[in-house]
Image 1 (cartoon, helix red, strand yellow):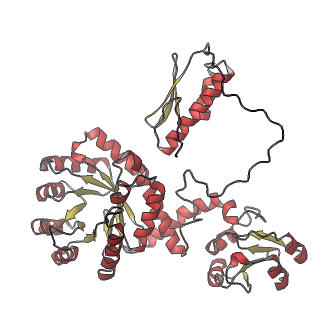
Image 2 (cartoon, rainbow, N blue to C red):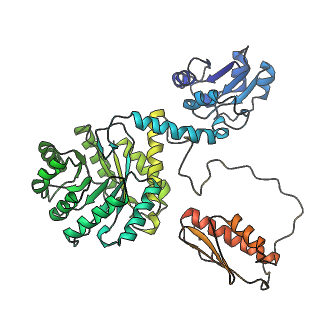
Image 3 (tube, rainbow, N blue to C red):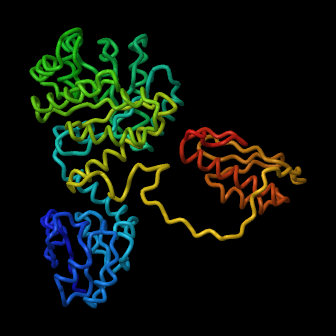
Length: 482
C-alpha cells in the first residue's frame, strides 16, 4: 500500500522522523489542524492508495476523496504517533471521522508499556538504590511513606506494604514518630525488609533512630541535616547509603548541608522542600529551579504529599499536575503518604503520572493522547447524544416496594470486594453483573422491582469500589456538588 502523510510546516520535521522515509506532503500552512480539503485538492497528489491527514482536523474531506479518487483518513492527533499508525495499518481500517489514535488506543496502550520499559532500561541514572535507578534521565520514582510505621502491627505493616507494591510504588519509606524507641525502629526496618524486595528507607531526623535503622538494613536515609550529618556521615558512607539532605537546623542552608555531605562521600538526594499551596508553593518551585541550575546532576526529592494532603480536591489531577511540575524542575523522586482518606490512591496516580511525563518528554509533546491517562470521572471524548423520540412516559416517583418472598439483601463493600449478604448465603464478587447473575441463578430474587433495585445498588457498590469511595446502601454515591 502506498501512503501519503499530509502535514503543515510546524510539524514537518517531526512527521518526517516519525514516518521514517514514507512520503510526506507539507502544505502551505503552519498548523496542520488548519488544513482544508481545498488545500489537499489543489496539491493534487496522485498515485497513492491512502492519504493520511492530521487527526485534529474536523473538516469533511469527502469532496477531496472524490476529486482525487483516493481514500483520505484521519491519522493520529500527534505527529509522533504516525509511525505507529503506519505500522498497524494492516490491523485496522482507519476512519474519516475518528482519529487513528482513538481507534488504536488498546494497541497503543500495550506497546506504550513496552516502550516505557525500554526507555527505563536504556536510561543512565546518577546511581542505584537496590537496583532501582535514581536520577539522570531515568523515570521519576515513587517513594510511598508509611506514616508512624513503628506503631503498626506486623500484619498491618505487611498489608500496607503489599498495597503500595500493587499500586506501583518503587520504594517504601518508613515514617518514624519522634517518640519511637530506636529498638522499635530496628524491628520495623527488619520486618519491612522481610516483607518486600523494594528498597526501604528510614525517615527520621533523630540520630539514634536513623543509626538503628541503618544497622537494621535500611537502603536509604531520610533526612540528614547539619545536626545529624557529623554523627552519621561515617556509617552512611561505609554502608554506601543514598541519603536525602534537607536544610537546617535553623538558618543552615540546603546548599551548605549538600556540600558537607558530598565532601564526606555520601550519595546525595536534595530536598529543597515543597511548600503547601498559599504558604509559599510558587516560591518553593523557584527554589527547586535555582537548586537544579546550581547543582546539575544531583537527584531531587519532591514532596508531593505536602500539597495534596493540604488540598481538598481530587488527587488525580493534582498529582498529574505536580508530576509535570516535578519533571520541569528536574525531580527524581516523587514522595507521598496516603495519610488521609482523600489522598488514597495517590501512589498509583503518581506512578502513572511519572510514566506519562517520561513518555511525553521523550516524544516532546504535552502529556495527553499517550495511550493511558489519569481521567476517572471526566471524559476524554464525549459521545454524541441519541436522538430522542417525540412520545414518552414520565417516570413515576412514588413506587411502593413489596417485600420479596425470597428475602432481602444487605450490600456492603469490604476487603476490596462487594458483599451481597442474604439470610441463606453470602455472595462475594468484584462487579455488579456477576453478583446479580448469581443471585438470579440461585433463585434469591423473585420480584422484578427487587431485581431492579439490587442491580442499582450493586452497580453503585461497584462504582464505589472502583473509585475508592465509601458505600452505604440506599444512600447516594456522589453528593450533589460532586
